[in-house]
Length: 255
Image (cartoon, rainbow, N blue to C red):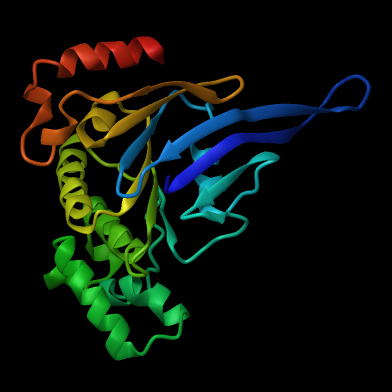
C-alpha cells in the first residue's frame, strides 16, 4: 500500500482555564487507520472540526501526530518532504512575482537553473490552461486562475502525493465546477495520488475513487464509500447518473 496511516491520534491543548488551572485537551483525531493505493483520488469528507485538515497536515509532515504512524512509499513521514505537495484554500501566490515565476519558485529554492525551472513551469502552465498568462501577475487573474497557478506550482517537483485542503471553497459555484473538471483532467494525465479535503458531498462524488467520511468529537473514520460511477467520472457528468442522488443521500445521512 502506498500511503498507510495507522492508529493516528492528535490532541491539542486549549487555552481556556478551568477552576483548578488545568488546560483542556481536545482530541482532534483518534485511532485513524487508512490505506491508500498509488494513483488513487481520495476525498476526506465531514463537518467542520472533524480533523480532516489536521490529518492532511500530518500526512504532509507539517504537523506531528501524538500517536500512530504515517508512511508514504514505505518511508515514515516525520517532516515535510519534496515528494509531498500541498495546495491550500488560500492561493498563497507571491504578488510581486509573475505567474511564471510563482510556478517556478519551488525549483528556484531547489537550486535549479532558470532555464530548467522555466521549462518545467511552462509545461505545467500549459497543463492547467494558463500558457498565455505567464507574464501576468496574481492581481491580474481571477480567483480560479490563481488557484490553477497554485496547482501548477504544487506539481513542479513531480510529487508522489498531492494534498489539497478545500482548494475551491472560496470560489463561486460555476468556477468551482470548471476547476473540478480541470482537476480530474490533470489527475488523469499525471496519475498523482491525491488526498482532497472538502465539505461538499457533490464535489467528493464528482472527484473521488473513494470517499472517507469522518465523524467528530473526536475525529475518526465513520465509513469509506466507493461511488458506483467512479470509473466514468473523467468522461461523463456523473451528476446525471441514476445512483448519484442515492449515494449523495447516503453520505449526508452518515455526516
